[in-house]
Image (cartoon, rainbow, N blue to C red; front, top):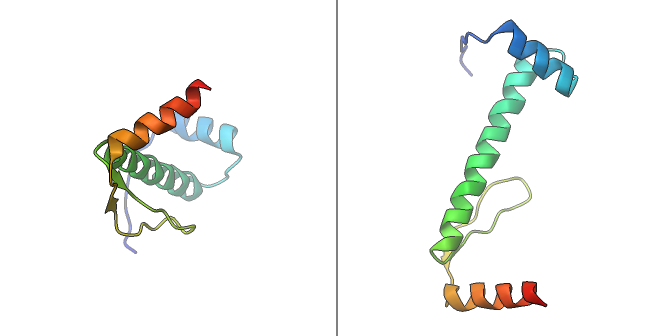
Length: 85
């Protein structure tokens, strides 16, 4: 791991500490980066689902190879009809 320098306002750090209870900037930055990675990964998975690709996520957050769904439109229709019940 390398050293990264970042300029972050004291007000933002204070707010993050107050909201999370985390004591160090390192904890706050790590949590923020992990949340960013999870969020962007989920966006990508949702984008794949819209084009008919299923992505399986393992418990540790790593992803197995995506596989193309047989009939994504039919699956979406089936899921939406269940919501209507």
